[in-house]
Length: 59
Ligand SMILES: [Zn+2]
Image (tube, rainbow, N blue to C red):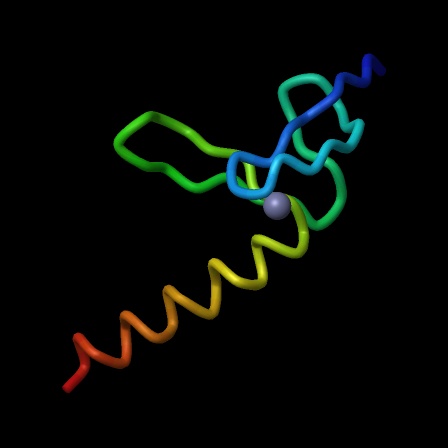
């Protein structure tokens, strides 16, 4: 399996992961610019902000 360096779109952290995939704990988020890769730490932050947004929509 080929591994490549991935760079977090938010904080710039780097980690190696499978080509075409993601390092453990990372996620992808679609934005206006296309697909962003987020590291594990930023993924947690992103999930929290999504949940906050859902709460606002709910009310
Ligand atoms: Zn990050």
